[in-house]
Length: 61
Length: 147
Image 1 (tube, rainbow over the protein chains, first blue to last red):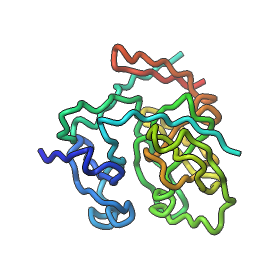
Image 2 (cartoon, chains in turn blue, green; image 1 turned 90 degrees about the vertical axis):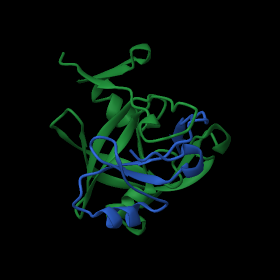
Image 3 (cartoon, chains in turn green, blue; image 1 turned 90 degrees about the horizontal axis):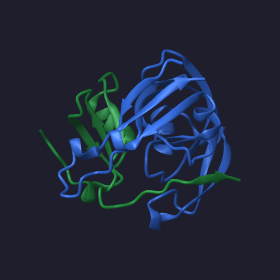
């Protein structure tokens, strides 16, 4: 199974199959969707760095 | 009340870093716009006020920011790996949203945000108002029930 580095690929878009295999990886979500095919069943997610603590609090003015 | 159970998910399934990726309460979400649809992971986040979606997803759904009202979002800043300070986004009035495990389709106002670290945040106003949520981090599960 292909694995990637979270640290080196943080912020990139990943297309995953239903069983979590990597179908594609790109900086650009639109390009990635075209690359793997719009009709291909995939879940899209962004790579997070495992070494980083995320705090996602926000408010809208 | 009919509770549905979900596993905390980690990106360790596809990352090869020595540090194990932190498991998070992530839910598969299908977003449908008039011209396209996409499946992404939504982070169940009680600290977020509304529904935030990365602006790249708007582009993938053929939603133009030029037709939407601008939005201004305050975050915790880049140092904390959160929403980076004051960032710009745009409101979209009605996106069809379907959550894994539920057949119901919600039509929600969402805010598309540039530079969001994750693809989608499910916050208080739209998500927590519709679902009771039980987090059991030590067991690696969270549960949802439609209110």
